[in-house]
Image (tube, rainbow, N blue to C red):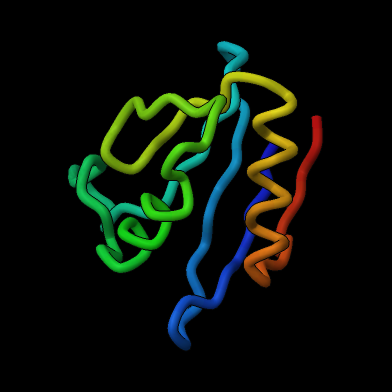
Length: 96
């Protein structure tokens, strides 16, 4: 499963990726600059916004600077609703 939500923050669009991997867990991540910089955030303002929105959010476990494990279906639904409530759009969805 892969879903990408796009949210406009202060006039700029940012992508938030929700993805399940072969090992089963579902993850939320934001972009890195690419290459071998996979622990560095590409857009610091995006990380700052997300950290503020996730403060007190139950069901997410931060596993990397730019990645969180979504620990339950309920947390996934609440996260998706948060993005939609913030004016986000589901710009890509692939379910398997």
